[in-house]
Length: 277
Ligand SMILES: [Zn+2]
Ligand SMILES: [Zn+2]
Image 1 (spheres, rainbow, N blue to C red):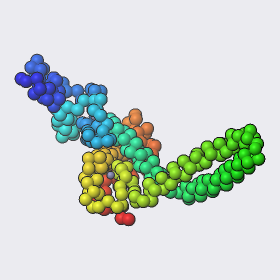
Image 2: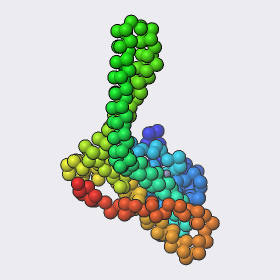
Image 3: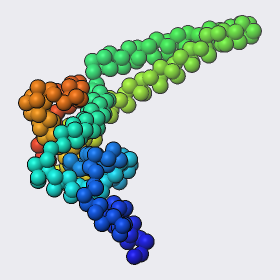
Image 4: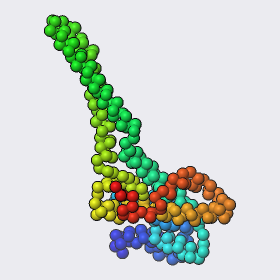
């Protein structure tokens, strides 16, 4: 068997599958092996969702083997339950969704031009005018001293008054430019943040570009993740209720931030939603 072909088969079936000595391996597939990725078994591992995008999570540190997944499905069909796998899957998804939501919040904050921002811009402009006035006065004094032949005194005034004022002015100018850049960011481009994946969308984009976003790998990845999270959480919640919170780690799983995490309606987002200017 060609090495390349063998490698591919191993990846698909697990190294054991190709070992002639382990003909009984099927009965030894231990789904509880900690090296096996439970998210992959139960649903879709987040590491598989964003390959090649700027959200690429890199390869999963755990094993994704098709024959383990087949075995897991066979067990499920035989009514076997794996509640701890479901809990791990929920926890895994929750981690990535919380991270994404945090990114969305940050992106939204960048877009806001709050009354505070506007007040700060006005204040900075006033400071700048004040500095210009003082600078003009200081320069005038230097000039007068120079005309009066008091060169040493003129140089002193230049050093202790003109230079510091110039530096302050340059600093204020930078501040003002930063402030107006921020407002230009939200103001001119009519940007908003995608509520599912956190990407910036322009309300000036045409339908074609928006459609590209909504069918793009990153957006669909988060949409799938949110939908899967909603489903697995409902399943686990039901189990938690019926067993009276029995499972050892049930309580800690998602006690924090549960309400904020289910934003975006779990993926009922279609092109055109929320994008009306
Ligand atoms: Zn994985
Ligand atoms: Zn999106």
